[in-house]
Image (cartoon, rainbow, N blue to C red; front, side, top):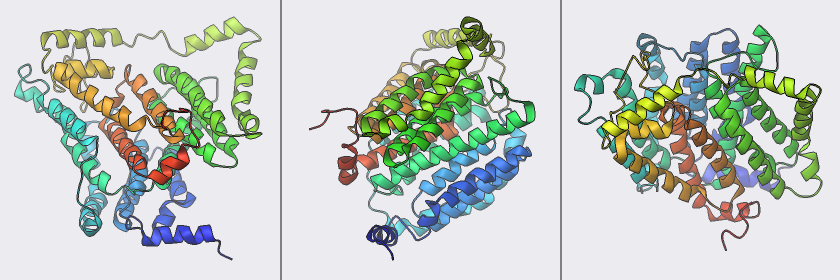
Length: 471
């Protein structure tokens, strides 16, 4: 016998203009399982192009069969993980991946045309004008300080376009095709990031099976990118557990995510996870009741006991060895990069030196790299000067006004985002167009849609940490 709730769910998919019958598949464990396995299995055999192609086809299928862009978003996030090993990719190799446009470009055009009659009159989101300001300053960066040849190099041109005009265009389209259903889009975001976290854990497992297990995971340059993903995923995983009867499973999964960051040797993401993860657990404890408060915390307690058991027998010696292995005293050369950034800012305080700036003595560039200062604040002031700083501050303030709501979902999402931003102070995060700059734009569109869903916000206020924030 079909229950009333199931019938209501069926009706939601068939009558809502955002959904098609295919959305039931795109919201199922089968869809997310295919995305994860479609990347994990080729990764084992170092066949990254196969994984990338699989995700590209999945992205195209999602664009064709539903107006709802969240399935396409999940496939896109997996696309970026499929090639995570190829961080030293050359210009020639990048153009070698141009075949991905064969399925994606027609699907994208079809999506725009097919669902156009269903779209309402466009109203800019609250994040639109801040993104316009950032776009203008990205294009103005370096005015009067670098040559046209430096400005129009392929690498900086890619970053300027994809952090600015292209991202602005994608944002405009995505806003129109994100469903106005807070419950659905909040859970879908959490599922997408949990799938990404699961894939990364499987990748780490593959590395360990090939190279051996230890207190630290085998070295991978992409550990920093993995740290970014886990910072964004762990709080959402914890939040998703609030919604489920057996939240202990999700708390345990989030604990594995946090431990993988600590074991990877990524210093900045580990420090931020040490802040973000406990705060997420506090949100969880406030929102679950009765016996669940103890039972659902068991994975975290077990992990804490395991770490104490490792350190206590020879506490000081083991702790010092862990810190040494953690590579916290490495010669990363960031001090030289920071000094160069400050020098460039003081020499060109108005528009900076632009993303086209290069100084191979201080930092030799790969084919498709810009001069990374490895710090978002310094990257902004060095590349775009004081006006660039004003644009990014404006964007950040607007985002905080959208995200600071009396809602467990908003709080956990913001915890992940602020953890990512904190890590970006010593890393490249915000200036990585795909996926992180795109993710930031997309996630605040989701939060804004949730704010407009009064029923969702009312239900979330029963699960909150900011008591009394709203009356």
